[in-house]
Length: 303
Image (tube, rainbow, N blue to C red; front, side, top):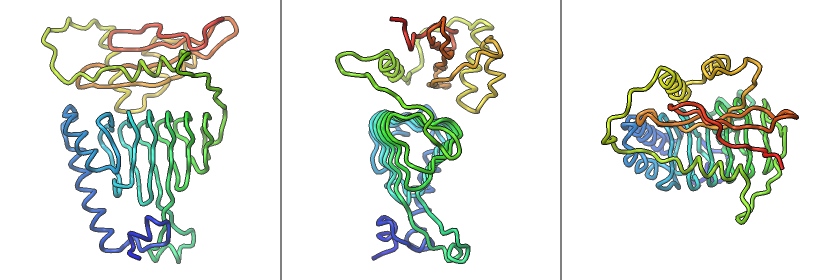
Protein backbone atom coordinates (compact mmCIF):
# COMPACT_ATOMS: atom_id res chain seq x y z
CA UNK A 1 0.00 0.00 0.00
CA UNK A 2 1.10 3.54 -0.68
CA UNK A 3 1.33 6.01 2.19
CA UNK A 4 -1.75 7.77 0.79
CA UNK A 5 -3.72 4.50 0.75
CA UNK A 6 -2.69 3.87 4.36
CA UNK A 7 -3.80 7.36 5.33
CA UNK A 8 -7.29 7.14 3.84
CA UNK A 9 -7.69 3.61 5.29
CA UNK A 10 -7.06 4.92 8.81
CA UNK A 11 -3.74 3.08 9.14
CA UNK A 12 -0.46 4.46 10.48
CA UNK A 13 1.42 6.24 7.69
CA UNK A 14 4.48 8.40 7.11
CA UNK A 15 3.36 12.03 7.20
CA UNK A 16 6.66 13.11 5.57
CA UNK A 17 6.15 11.01 2.46
CA UNK A 18 7.24 12.98 -0.60
CA UNK A 19 4.03 12.37 -2.57
CA UNK A 20 1.87 13.50 0.34
CA UNK A 21 3.95 16.64 0.87
CA UNK A 22 3.68 17.45 -2.83
CA UNK A 23 -0.11 17.30 -2.72
CA UNK A 24 -0.26 19.27 0.55
CA UNK A 25 1.80 22.06 -0.99
CA UNK A 26 -0.34 22.10 -4.14
CA UNK A 27 -3.50 22.51 -2.05
CA UNK A 28 -1.87 25.32 -0.07
CA UNK A 29 -1.45 27.19 -3.35
CA UNK A 30 -5.13 26.65 -4.21
CA UNK A 31 -6.18 27.90 -0.77
CA UNK A 32 -4.03 30.98 -1.24
CA UNK A 33 -5.61 31.63 -4.63
CA UNK A 34 -9.09 31.26 -3.16
CA UNK A 35 -8.33 33.57 -0.25
CA UNK A 36 -6.93 36.20 -2.60
CA UNK A 37 -10.03 36.30 -4.80
CA UNK A 38 -12.11 39.44 -4.68
CA UNK A 39 -14.73 38.84 -1.95
CA UNK A 40 -17.55 40.01 -4.23
CA UNK A 41 -16.54 37.68 -7.09
CA UNK A 42 -18.99 35.03 -5.95
CA UNK A 43 -18.89 33.03 -9.20
CA UNK A 44 -15.10 32.63 -9.14
CA UNK A 45 -15.10 31.81 -5.44
CA UNK A 46 -17.75 29.11 -5.85
CA UNK A 47 -15.98 27.66 -8.89
CA UNK A 48 -12.73 27.34 -6.95
CA UNK A 49 -14.46 25.76 -3.96
CA UNK A 50 -16.01 23.16 -6.25
CA UNK A 51 -12.55 22.49 -7.66
CA UNK A 52 -10.94 22.32 -4.22
CA UNK A 53 -13.49 20.27 -2.27
CA UNK A 54 -14.52 16.68 -2.82
CA UNK A 55 -18.18 17.69 -2.92
CA UNK A 56 -19.76 21.14 -3.10
CA UNK A 57 -22.50 22.83 -5.13
CA UNK A 58 -23.54 26.27 -6.33
CA UNK A 59 -24.97 27.10 -2.89
CA UNK A 60 -21.69 26.40 -1.04
CA UNK A 61 -20.45 29.58 0.63
CA UNK A 62 -17.25 29.87 2.68
CA UNK A 63 -16.01 33.26 3.80
CA UNK A 64 -12.34 33.92 3.26
CA UNK A 65 -9.87 32.92 4.59
CA UNK A 66 -10.31 29.16 4.35
CA UNK A 67 -7.63 26.53 4.93
CA UNK A 68 -7.49 22.77 4.39
CA UNK A 69 -4.90 20.03 3.86
CA UNK A 70 -6.19 17.94 0.95
CA UNK A 71 -9.60 19.42 0.15
CA UNK A 72 -10.78 16.41 -1.82
CA UNK A 73 -11.62 14.57 1.41
CA UNK A 74 -14.15 17.28 2.38
CA UNK A 75 -17.77 16.77 1.33
CA UNK A 76 -20.39 19.39 2.17
CA UNK A 77 -24.13 19.18 1.60
CA UNK A 78 -26.61 21.63 0.16
CA UNK A 79 -26.68 25.26 1.31
CA UNK A 80 -23.48 24.98 3.34
CA UNK A 81 -22.33 28.23 4.96
CA UNK A 82 -19.06 28.81 6.83
CA UNK A 83 -17.83 32.08 8.28
CA UNK A 84 -14.30 33.47 8.36
CA UNK A 85 -11.29 31.34 9.30
CA UNK A 86 -12.59 27.79 8.77
CA UNK A 87 -9.68 25.31 9.01
CA UNK A 88 -10.11 21.62 8.14
CA UNK A 89 -7.26 19.10 8.41
CA UNK A 90 -8.78 16.45 6.18
CA UNK A 91 -6.32 13.58 6.22
CA UNK A 92 -9.45 11.45 6.73
CA UNK A 93 -12.89 12.17 5.26
CA UNK A 94 -14.84 15.13 6.66
CA UNK A 95 -18.51 14.80 5.74
CA UNK A 96 -20.98 17.62 6.46
CA UNK A 97 -24.71 17.39 5.76
CA UNK A 98 -27.27 19.80 4.31
CA UNK A 99 -28.15 23.21 5.79
CA UNK A 100 -25.16 23.44 8.11
CA UNK A 101 -23.91 26.76 9.54
CA UNK A 102 -20.31 27.11 10.74
CA UNK A 103 -19.24 30.12 12.79
CA UNK A 104 -15.94 32.03 12.60
CA UNK A 105 -12.60 30.37 13.38
CA UNK A 106 -13.90 26.80 13.58
CA UNK A 107 -11.25 24.05 13.39
CA UNK A 108 -11.97 20.46 12.35
CA UNK A 109 -9.15 17.94 12.82
CA UNK A 110 -8.77 14.36 11.58
CA UNK A 111 -4.99 13.90 12.01
CA UNK A 112 -3.88 11.95 15.10
CA UNK A 113 -0.46 11.76 16.77
CA UNK A 114 0.88 9.44 19.44
CA UNK A 115 1.12 10.80 22.99
CA UNK A 116 4.44 8.94 23.26
CA UNK A 117 7.02 11.54 22.21
CA UNK A 118 9.42 8.91 20.89
CA UNK A 119 6.77 7.57 18.54
CA UNK A 120 5.55 11.06 17.66
CA UNK A 121 9.09 12.12 16.69
CA UNK A 122 9.10 9.48 13.93
CA UNK A 123 6.42 11.54 12.12
CA UNK A 124 4.19 8.49 11.98
CA UNK A 125 0.49 9.32 12.37
CA UNK A 126 -3.00 8.17 11.49
CA UNK A 127 -6.34 9.84 10.74
CA UNK A 128 -9.93 9.38 11.90
CA UNK A 129 -12.97 10.76 10.01
CA UNK A 130 -15.34 13.48 11.21
CA UNK A 131 -19.04 13.37 10.33
CA UNK A 132 -21.55 16.19 10.86
CA UNK A 133 -25.24 15.64 10.13
CA UNK A 134 -27.93 17.83 8.56
CA UNK A 135 -29.08 21.17 10.00
CA UNK A 136 -26.18 21.54 12.42
CA UNK A 137 -24.99 24.92 13.75
CA UNK A 138 -21.36 25.04 14.88
CA UNK A 139 -20.67 28.18 16.94
CA UNK A 140 -17.59 30.34 16.62
CA UNK A 141 -14.18 29.13 17.83
CA UNK A 142 -15.32 25.51 18.12
CA UNK A 143 -12.71 22.75 17.78
CA UNK A 144 -13.84 19.30 16.59
CA UNK A 145 -11.36 16.48 17.23
CA UNK A 146 -10.69 13.35 15.14
CA UNK A 147 -13.25 10.57 15.03
CA UNK A 148 -16.20 12.69 16.18
CA UNK A 149 -19.73 12.33 14.83
CA UNK A 150 -22.29 15.11 15.40
CA UNK A 151 -25.88 14.09 14.75
CA UNK A 152 -28.62 15.94 12.86
CA UNK A 153 -30.16 19.17 14.20
CA UNK A 154 -27.43 19.84 16.77
CA UNK A 155 -26.11 23.16 18.02
CA UNK A 156 -22.55 23.35 19.35
CA UNK A 157 -21.95 26.35 21.61
CA UNK A 158 -19.21 28.86 20.81
CA UNK A 159 -15.76 28.00 22.14
CA UNK A 160 -16.53 24.32 22.67
CA UNK A 161 -14.04 21.48 22.19
CA UNK A 162 -15.87 18.44 20.82
CA UNK A 163 -13.98 15.31 21.88
CA UNK A 164 -16.78 12.71 21.71
CA UNK A 165 -19.87 12.01 19.60
CA UNK A 166 -22.88 14.31 20.06
CA UNK A 167 -26.27 12.60 19.54
CA UNK A 168 -28.85 14.07 17.18
CA UNK A 169 -31.22 16.79 18.38
CA UNK A 170 -28.86 18.08 21.06
CA UNK A 171 -27.40 21.36 22.22
CA UNK A 172 -23.85 20.81 23.45
CA UNK A 173 -21.24 23.18 24.86
CA UNK A 174 -18.11 23.27 26.97
CA UNK A 175 -14.60 21.82 27.08
CA UNK A 176 -15.06 18.97 26.61
CA UNK A 177 -18.44 19.54 24.99
CA UNK A 178 -21.36 17.84 26.71
CA UNK A 179 -25.08 17.77 25.99
CA UNK A 180 -26.82 20.47 28.00
CA UNK A 181 -30.24 20.29 26.36
CA UNK A 182 -32.23 17.97 24.12
CA UNK A 183 -34.32 19.34 21.27
CA UNK A 184 -37.82 18.00 20.73
CA UNK A 185 -38.65 18.37 17.07
CA UNK A 186 -42.23 18.94 15.99
CA UNK A 187 -41.49 19.92 12.43
CA UNK A 188 -43.52 18.27 9.69
CA UNK A 189 -43.97 19.21 6.07
CA UNK A 190 -47.68 19.88 6.65
CA UNK A 191 -47.36 21.88 9.86
CA UNK A 192 -44.01 23.71 10.06
CA UNK A 193 -43.18 25.31 13.38
CA UNK A 194 -42.17 28.93 13.82
CA UNK A 195 -38.52 27.88 14.11
CA UNK A 196 -38.67 26.11 10.74
CA UNK A 197 -40.19 29.17 9.09
CA UNK A 198 -37.55 31.37 10.69
CA UNK A 199 -34.70 29.28 9.31
CA UNK A 200 -36.25 29.17 5.87
CA UNK A 201 -36.59 32.94 5.91
CA UNK A 202 -32.94 33.32 6.85
CA UNK A 203 -31.90 31.18 3.90
CA UNK A 204 -34.12 33.23 1.58
CA UNK A 205 -32.18 36.47 2.16
CA UNK A 206 -30.84 37.33 -1.32
CA UNK A 207 -27.20 38.03 -2.08
CA UNK A 208 -27.01 41.19 -4.13
CA UNK A 209 -24.41 40.89 -6.89
CA UNK A 210 -25.11 44.07 -8.87
CA UNK A 211 -24.82 47.73 -8.05
CA UNK A 212 -28.20 49.41 -7.33
CA UNK A 213 -29.37 51.76 -10.05
CA UNK A 214 -30.96 54.20 -7.60
CA UNK A 215 -29.07 56.40 -5.20
CA UNK A 216 -29.84 55.36 -1.60
CA UNK A 217 -30.93 57.97 0.90
CA UNK A 218 -28.25 59.15 3.33
CA UNK A 219 -28.23 57.02 6.47
CA UNK A 220 -29.22 58.59 9.75
CA UNK A 221 -26.78 58.51 12.67
CA UNK A 222 -28.76 55.70 14.27
CA UNK A 223 -28.66 53.67 11.05
CA UNK A 224 -24.92 54.26 10.69
CA UNK A 225 -24.36 53.04 14.27
CA UNK A 226 -26.33 49.84 13.67
CA UNK A 227 -24.71 49.33 10.27
CA UNK A 228 -21.27 49.67 11.81
CA UNK A 229 -22.17 47.10 14.46
CA UNK A 230 -23.57 44.60 11.96
CA UNK A 231 -20.49 44.72 9.77
CA UNK A 232 -18.05 44.69 12.70
CA UNK A 233 -19.61 41.49 14.04
CA UNK A 234 -18.66 39.71 10.83
CA UNK A 235 -14.99 40.59 11.31
CA UNK A 236 -14.41 39.97 14.98
CA UNK A 237 -16.01 38.83 18.19
CA UNK A 238 -17.31 41.95 19.94
CA UNK A 239 -17.57 42.07 23.74
CA UNK A 240 -21.13 41.37 24.91
CA UNK A 241 -21.06 44.61 26.93
CA UNK A 242 -20.32 46.62 23.78
CA UNK A 243 -23.10 44.91 21.82
CA UNK A 244 -25.58 45.45 24.63
CA UNK A 245 -24.62 49.13 24.81
CA UNK A 246 -24.89 49.59 21.04
CA UNK A 247 -28.34 47.99 20.98
CA UNK A 248 -29.52 50.11 23.90
CA UNK A 249 -30.39 47.03 25.96
CA UNK A 250 -30.26 46.66 29.73
CA UNK A 251 -26.97 45.27 31.01
CA UNK A 252 -28.85 42.37 32.64
CA UNK A 253 -30.93 41.58 29.55
CA UNK A 254 -28.75 38.55 28.70
CA UNK A 255 -29.68 38.67 25.03
CA UNK A 256 -29.14 35.37 23.22
CA UNK A 257 -27.64 35.72 19.77
CA UNK A 258 -29.21 33.29 17.30
CA UNK A 259 -27.47 33.87 13.99
CA UNK A 260 -26.21 36.49 11.59
CA UNK A 261 -25.89 36.89 7.82
CA UNK A 262 -23.46 39.50 6.56
CA UNK A 263 -22.55 40.88 3.16
CA UNK A 264 -20.57 44.06 3.99
CA UNK A 265 -19.63 44.75 0.37
CA UNK A 266 -23.33 44.99 -0.52
CA UNK A 267 -24.11 46.88 2.71
CA UNK A 268 -26.64 44.33 3.81
CA UNK A 269 -26.95 41.76 6.54
CA UNK A 270 -28.65 41.07 9.84
CA UNK A 271 -28.21 39.79 13.37
CA UNK A 272 -30.95 37.74 15.06
CA UNK A 273 -31.12 37.62 18.84
CA UNK A 274 -33.69 36.88 21.52
CA UNK A 275 -34.50 37.44 25.19
CA UNK A 276 -34.84 34.42 27.50
CA UNK A 277 -38.38 33.48 28.40
CA UNK A 278 -39.90 34.76 31.63
CA UNK A 279 -43.26 33.70 33.12
CA UNK A 280 -45.07 36.85 32.03
CA UNK A 281 -43.49 37.19 28.60
CA UNK A 282 -42.92 34.69 25.79
CA UNK A 283 -39.48 34.55 24.25
CA UNK A 284 -39.19 37.26 21.60
CA UNK A 285 -36.74 37.29 18.73
CA UNK A 286 -35.46 40.46 17.12
CA UNK A 287 -33.74 41.15 13.83
CA UNK A 288 -31.12 43.88 13.69
CA UNK A 289 -30.38 45.24 10.21
CA UNK A 290 -28.59 48.37 8.96
CA UNK A 291 -32.04 49.99 8.85
CA UNK A 292 -32.76 49.43 12.52
CA UNK A 293 -34.19 47.01 15.06
CA UNK A 294 -37.51 45.20 14.70
CA UNK A 295 -39.53 42.52 16.48
CA UNK A 296 -38.93 39.48 14.31
CA UNK A 297 -40.94 36.51 15.54
CA UNK A 298 -42.38 34.87 18.65
CA UNK A 299 -40.37 31.69 19.13
CA UNK A 300 -42.70 30.33 21.82
CA UNK A 301 -46.09 31.94 21.14
CA UNK A 302 -48.80 31.76 23.75
CA UNK A 303 -51.52 29.24 22.94
